[in-house]
Image 1 (cartoon, rainbow, N blue to C red):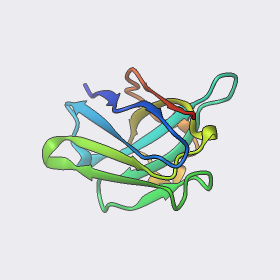
Image 2: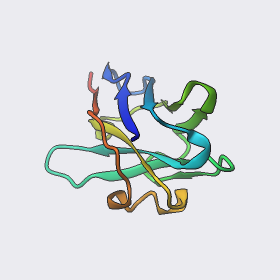
Image 3: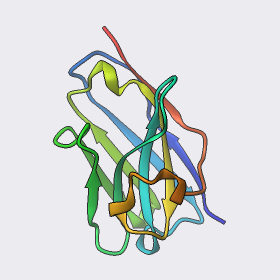
Length: 125
């Protein structure tokens, strides 16, 4: 059974950067699609970036395109989210999850499972 754990969140000023990590016990990135999601208070969970373990294809939501980069390391069973030029509206709890569906379905967070405890990202001056 795959279990995922997101880490790397924290407090950062607008314009700053953070790198989130997703560690998966029982995870083989090469078999599945891994996604990063976030949920801000009072808002629905949002799929922001996904990567295909099969061919490395990626998906980015418009809200993060050009600022965030997803990458995976199958050998370490890790998936990363490099977040640059952070904005106040990026403040949320960030989660990673897994699916057998295409990375292009990243917006459909209900297709994903193995949700672990998220990591809080706060962007504030």
